Image (cartoon, rainbow, N blue to C red):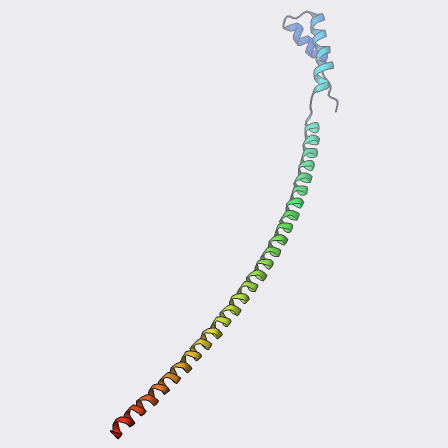
Length: 139
Protein backbone atom coordinates (compact mmCIF):
# COMPACT_ATOMS: atom_id res chain seq x y z
CA UNK A 1 0.00 0.00 0.00
CA UNK A 2 1.31 3.43 -0.91
CA UNK A 3 1.14 6.35 1.47
CA UNK A 4 1.50 9.95 0.50
CA UNK A 5 4.40 11.62 2.24
CA UNK A 6 4.36 15.39 2.44
CA UNK A 7 7.98 16.11 1.54
CA UNK A 8 7.25 19.84 1.24
CA UNK A 9 5.77 20.01 4.75
CA UNK A 10 8.63 17.93 6.11
CA UNK A 11 11.25 20.17 4.45
CA UNK A 12 9.44 23.32 5.65
CA UNK A 13 9.42 22.06 9.24
CA UNK A 14 13.16 21.31 9.05
CA UNK A 15 13.84 24.74 7.50
CA UNK A 16 11.82 26.41 10.29
CA UNK A 17 13.98 24.54 12.80
CA UNK A 18 17.09 26.09 11.31
CA UNK A 19 18.18 23.52 8.73
CA UNK A 20 19.21 24.95 5.36
CA UNK A 21 16.75 24.60 2.48
CA UNK A 22 18.96 22.18 0.51
CA UNK A 23 19.55 20.00 3.59
CA UNK A 24 15.85 20.03 4.48
CA UNK A 25 14.91 18.98 0.93
CA UNK A 26 17.60 16.26 0.98
CA UNK A 27 16.24 14.97 4.32
CA UNK A 28 12.67 14.94 2.93
CA UNK A 29 13.72 13.09 -0.23
CA UNK A 30 15.75 10.56 1.81
CA UNK A 31 12.82 10.00 4.18
CA UNK A 32 10.46 9.44 1.24
CA UNK A 33 12.86 7.08 -0.56
CA UNK A 34 14.15 5.05 2.37
CA UNK A 35 11.80 5.36 5.35
CA UNK A 36 8.47 5.33 3.55
CA UNK A 37 9.54 2.38 1.39
CA UNK A 38 10.10 0.31 4.54
CA UNK A 39 6.97 1.51 6.34
CA UNK A 40 4.69 -1.29 7.48
CA UNK A 41 0.98 -0.62 7.37
CA UNK A 42 -1.86 -2.07 9.40
CA UNK A 43 -3.00 -3.96 6.30
CA UNK A 44 0.49 -5.44 5.95
CA UNK A 45 0.43 -6.50 9.59
CA UNK A 46 -3.09 -7.93 9.29
CA UNK A 47 -2.12 -9.89 6.18
CA UNK A 48 1.01 -11.25 7.84
CA UNK A 49 -0.90 -12.05 11.03
CA UNK A 50 -3.59 -13.91 9.11
CA UNK A 51 -0.99 -15.89 7.17
CA UNK A 52 0.84 -16.77 10.38
CA UNK A 53 -2.46 -17.74 12.01
CA UNK A 54 -3.32 -20.05 9.10
CA UNK A 55 0.16 -21.61 9.22
CA UNK A 56 -0.11 -22.08 12.98
CA UNK A 57 -3.59 -23.61 12.72
CA UNK A 58 -2.36 -25.99 9.99
CA UNK A 59 0.62 -26.98 12.16
CA UNK A 60 -1.66 -27.54 15.16
CA UNK A 61 -4.05 -29.64 13.04
CA UNK A 62 -1.14 -31.76 11.73
CA UNK A 63 0.21 -32.19 15.26
CA UNK A 64 -3.26 -33.13 16.54
CA UNK A 65 -3.60 -35.69 13.75
CA UNK A 66 -0.16 -37.15 14.54
CA UNK A 67 -0.98 -37.31 18.25
CA UNK A 68 -4.32 -39.00 17.60
CA UNK A 69 -2.61 -41.56 15.36
CA UNK A 70 0.06 -42.19 18.01
CA UNK A 71 -2.56 -42.56 20.72
CA UNK A 72 -4.54 -44.99 18.56
CA UNK A 73 -1.39 -47.04 17.89
CA UNK A 74 -0.49 -47.08 21.60
CA UNK A 75 -4.05 -48.07 22.51
CA UNK A 76 -3.92 -50.92 19.99
CA UNK A 77 -0.55 -52.09 21.33
CA UNK A 78 -1.82 -51.92 24.92
CA UNK A 79 -4.94 -53.91 24.07
CA UNK A 80 -2.82 -56.55 22.32
CA UNK A 81 -0.47 -56.73 25.31
CA UNK A 82 -3.37 -57.03 27.73
CA UNK A 83 -4.93 -59.81 25.63
CA UNK A 84 -1.61 -61.69 25.52
CA UNK A 85 -1.20 -61.25 29.28
CA UNK A 86 -4.72 -62.59 29.87
CA UNK A 87 -3.98 -65.63 27.67
CA UNK A 88 -0.74 -66.26 29.57
CA UNK A 89 -2.48 -65.90 32.94
CA UNK A 90 -5.31 -68.23 31.88
CA UNK A 91 -2.76 -70.80 30.73
CA UNK A 92 -0.86 -70.46 34.02
CA UNK A 93 -4.05 -70.79 36.08
CA UNK A 94 -5.10 -73.83 34.05
CA UNK A 95 -1.70 -75.41 34.65
CA UNK A 96 -1.91 -74.68 38.38
CA UNK A 97 -5.46 -76.09 38.56
CA UNK A 98 -4.37 -79.27 36.77
CA UNK A 99 -1.38 -79.63 39.08
CA UNK A 100 -3.57 -79.12 42.15
CA UNK A 101 -6.07 -81.70 40.86
CA UNK A 102 -3.21 -84.18 40.38
CA UNK A 103 -1.93 -83.49 43.88
CA UNK A 104 -5.46 -83.93 45.25
CA UNK A 105 -5.77 -87.31 43.48
CA UNK A 106 -2.34 -88.39 44.77
CA UNK A 107 -3.24 -87.30 48.31
CA UNK A 108 -6.62 -89.08 48.14
CA UNK A 109 -4.92 -92.25 46.85
CA UNK A 110 -2.35 -92.07 49.67
CA UNK A 111 -5.13 -91.60 52.25
CA UNK A 112 -7.10 -94.52 50.79
CA UNK A 113 -3.96 -96.68 50.87
CA UNK A 114 -3.25 -95.75 54.50
CA UNK A 115 -6.88 -96.43 55.46
CA UNK A 116 -6.71 -99.84 53.85
CA UNK A 117 -3.42 -100.65 55.61
CA UNK A 118 -4.83 -99.51 58.94
CA UNK A 119 -7.93 -101.64 58.40
CA UNK A 120 -5.77 -104.69 57.61
CA UNK A 121 -3.59 -104.09 60.68
CA UNK A 122 -6.59 -103.56 62.92
CA UNK A 123 -8.17 -106.76 61.54
CA UNK A 124 -4.93 -108.67 62.16
CA UNK A 125 -4.68 -107.24 65.68
CA UNK A 126 -8.31 -108.21 66.34
CA UNK A 127 -7.64 -111.75 65.06
CA UNK A 128 -4.58 -112.09 67.30
CA UNK A 129 -6.53 -110.68 70.26
CA UNK A 130 -9.39 -113.12 69.68
CA UNK A 131 -6.92 -116.01 69.36
CA UNK A 132 -5.17 -114.95 72.60
CA UNK A 133 -8.55 -114.60 74.36
CA UNK A 134 -9.64 -118.02 73.09
CA UNK A 135 -6.38 -119.55 74.32
CA UNK A 136 -6.82 -117.95 77.74
CA UNK A 137 -10.41 -119.18 78.01
CA UNK A 138 -9.34 -122.80 77.21
CA UNK A 139 -6.76 -122.77 79.92
